Image 1 (spheres, rainbow, N blue to C red):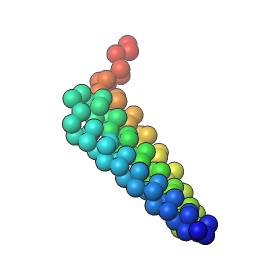
Image 2 (spheres, one colour; image 1 turned 90 degrees about the horizontal axis):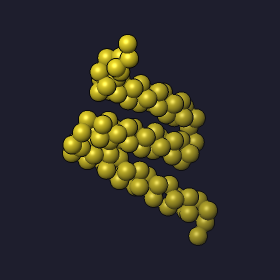
Image 3 (cartoon, rainbow, N blue to C red; image 1 turned 60 degrees about the vertical axis):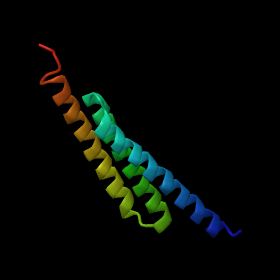
Image 4 (cartoon, helix red, strand yellow; image 1 turned 180 degrees about the vertical axis):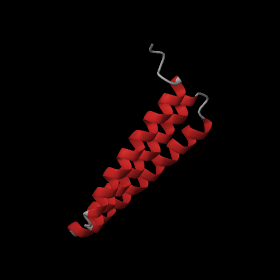
Length: 95
């Protein structure tokens, strides 16, 4: 087995597991009984997408995809912070 073939199998396996991880996150976001479970599911999906983009960066050798992953991570972080602010309500109980 050549190293290129082994790396191909490795990257396909990693992408398959990341897709499964994202699917579990979607299920958690839809079925979660609490709002915090839904926020956690959205964060899981975002993390899986970031990891998949970074894996594709390594496979394709395109450096700009790493920049896309960084921007997506920032958007994911801001969305989770906003959802938590909505969940806690306003200023978070501080006066």
